[in-house]
Length: 373
Image (cartoon, rainbow, N blue to C red):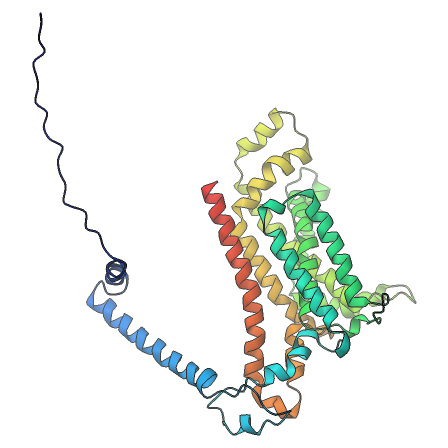
């Protein structure tokens, strides 16, 4: 009977014990590693903290501690008595309805307010992956019809309001939403056209992109407002807001086309060959295989273009359309409030920041999902 000799095994090496740090310990480690790793870095950090502290204290004293939040009626004597040492936030509750809705009839301003809420609800719903179905297009169509009915009126007891009375935040959202909603598919078609093997289509797409990108947006708006009506037949007049909307769509389409084209170039050649190998048509190949990958590659530049485009809507001032920034400028024409334009611009800036920051955060979440996917 054979026996197996017992071979002693070396014990597993025991490393140094893991140190359990508290939250404050982790914070101290991060501070030492990032803000105070050396003497020069420590000096720069302390100087920056001193500067930021001074700025924060000054802003606190001007914007909060010494500020005036309300005044009786339109009496601005309390604000003028501050002599610049405090903000006069009373201008916001006094002028916010004009800033947000322009010259829209005062009694009917619930209609553009409801239109803005519908826009925001559409943005929120569209950002949820669970709603990315065919029904979403129907929802958008119905919602946009409802917004148009609210803004124009003329039925159900609502008075008719012409487009020259529209202004403020609804106009900004209309220009940006329709511009991106129609400019994005236009950009995709132009990007595909620039990669087409047909010389005529490729040349037309290149000409369109280079022509639109070669001139500032103000020039396009000026052409749409002043030059375009000269080429129309007698008696035919297209509304100024619609002309500006067409200019924004063409402008957005040209810039988005270049972004999408960059994404198309980033898709490996093997993906095209694999789609051809399984017998997909040209449109099936692009819709099911190429474009989804291309758009995922260019999410950051796409969102940058969206944000820049949203802010560029303020340029419609040049053709006399009252967007959000224009109504803010007009609101402080009142001599009683002319000295407090900074507070009005801060209020409008916060509105722009909220929308742009929401788009930025959403793009980051899409990138995170793409990284985990």
